[in-house]
Length: 193
Image 1 (cartoon, rainbow, N blue to C red):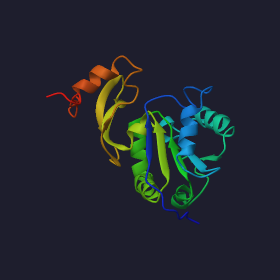
Image 2 (cartoon, rainbow, N blue to C red):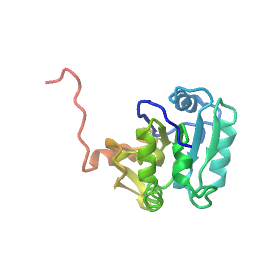
Image 3 (cartoon, rainbow, N blue to C red):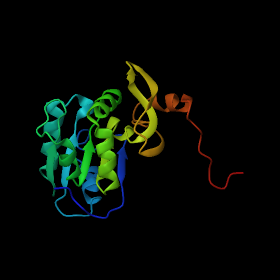
Image 4 (spheres, rainbow, N blue to C red):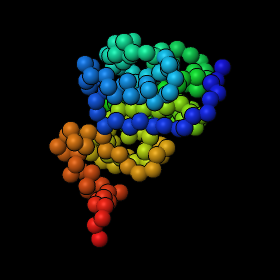
């Protein structure tokens, strides 16, 4: 049964941090849970970008089983349900992990998760993600999954306007590559003429 609730559509995009990078600091993960606005929200982890790596899934459960929520995950390599749409549309939060943005987008489009996740978001499901799981929601961004070892622009889902560069402050080559991207426009300081 699909949930019915009126909620503002939210996407929480994180360039880094969270349970996978800071297992002793779950502040960002608590923020994601609080964004649902309900006690004990159902949160589903999509580890697609990591190739559904078991160690990543285990880290998710190790963190979220300590928090006020009902955690689950959905593997596209070994799905536990035949009705992926219903399963995802019943979730209060969908949390997308990092890894290869390119592979994530290819698989999601093949499995029609792009359409399913848009429907979930429009019905009030909180979408969240880190790294590739954050970049995927934007029109485009920079990814090292387009060509190995090289940051290149990539077209993403376009749920959010603009571009996103994960790890902008955490990796020395991200900032200069972002400033060379075709969509880059420097921000003006407020009050400047």
